[in-house]
Figure (tube, rainbow, N blue to C red):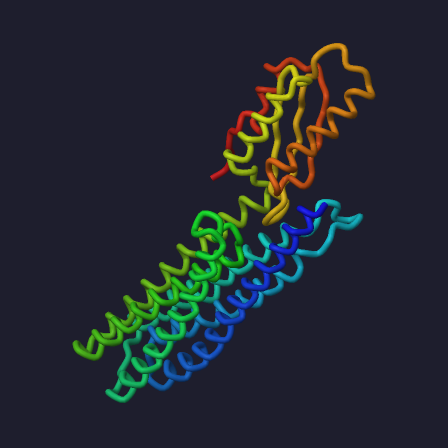
Length: 327
């Protein structure tokens, strides 16, 4: 129990750090969105307006992520016996939709409108727009560095990016920095050549970037929401532990599913050696469950099914063989 308490304390600390990272990103995006919108209307810049839409989308997404952090740690209850861990994945999916609709689609619209109607900017408009974008680059870069620092502190890309909230912030801030660079390039080329096509192309490029990021984030959230299995390394350790038990004759099937950021459901169908009475079976089951929990800390729900079903029948199940479906 003390180990579980220590893990929960560590999880709460990680959530607090992630919450600070999200709040920093939210504050930066709110200020930047207002500055970009004002600058975009004053300068009549489609690229700057696209970046304003990008920052508005990011601000809404940070609110979604704050909701995810608060709601996903609620304890299990009768209606949700496996807890609320998947709330994190749901709100991350909404954030991906927000990036697509509010950011990507509006940027495409601005680019097409600029190509269709043209734009006539004065020198003052260019200067104001570039100044706004320069300030935005500093703010977005600072927010990105804060997020990357947390990722590094939580074990690097492999472990730190498991948290969908932190992963979304890193993706948003990285995309924002690249988007600002595209917008500055488009405005600068428009100023030098007098051709609005450069800003239009910058808006279309920003839209394409946002749609791609939204697709990647949405696909990851989808996989987790519909029941993604534990990583192969953890599943391999569980199977090896089961196979090593002297009372288990064979492991007919092993099923795992992530139910949250740090929680996994494990269900195994095993064939025990002959001659074990019911009391002995119960003792073995309790010991094996504790061993699995110690070996894979996130395995907080473990179910064992004792069966004499032939292994070849269980092996035909896609879930047991590890086959994947969908796109």
